Length: 461
Image (tube, rainbow, N blue to C red; front, side):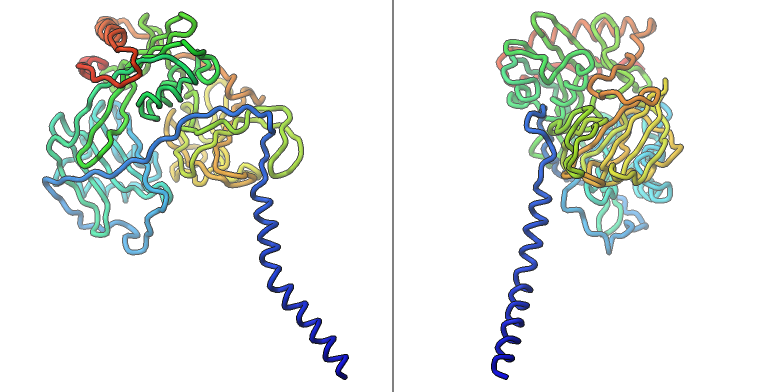
């Protein structure tokens, strides 16, 4: 009897010890699996700077409070990943309702914002070439604020809060300073421009502007040169400026000069051109996301990080922070939007000339992106995530031409049209002054204030 009790006691002790150890054993296995890396040791990694977080602005003048409270105001929990700003390029015929609808804000809700702003400014009267910035919660995608440049002296600010949607006009809320910087390449275009004080967003734009004609990641050598003129936008309450647009940029590679100048027509449509008037801009964006590195390239044989076997990798993986906006590479029509096997949440867009693009592993798809929807180049279609068979946040980007996969980094497309005859004289004025200003920037790797008006880069209305 005593031996039986001892045996039962030992069994119970073993069961108890197993119950204590089981969670740690399972946890160790889970941790080990998540920590696996699917990239080959000899894989090429291209690094780029990340964008610093933006801060909120303040200041008040006139307040118009909406009767409508923000949806979910009592239940919505703000995202923990901060906010993301989207600067909108207003073109002729654009309305705020359409702009918001393209970013997933329903018409009824959009009209609440318009109604809230009426006492300060009628947002149905937005015009081309006036600044418009939308701020979204990075995690929940809720619209947080609208900022619209009414004129040279005032800015409309419409913001959501627990008290509803409020609007105000701010006197001289911001000013635009034009900066220029020049220097030599030592490590790489992005690394050297950012180290010299160029905002990361501007550095990414330079790479995108020249990326179709120059291998900006590996094609520049020590001793090559760069010059750039860009906007810094200062707003009330902000300790740091927001990056505006690249106005002009120049690379000298092996003694050969490449220059790109921004020029906008009177409808607010802009592109980058060579001094000859030939377009530098293409019909496709070079990169559909602001990435931190290319973590995996197009390959006919890659070791899959989840399936643990060799198979083709039909696209390029751009590693980026969770929630980074993903933009359509070109105009087109949504062919599919939803869950797609290993790609997780994905969007496929059909473009002209039998070209299609695919964007995979998205955390979310913009609500307005549904099959059959018309999409514009640069429109936000979703946000970086890690859905499907993925080991971390990144964008999987594919391009097919006539059904055949092509390496997105080797893909070529048409240039935008050249400067037209009616705008030739105004462009010539822009070209002469911009080239002169580029040449005047001291090559000391330090930002320099330039006495240059941004209207120089715009056709007269």
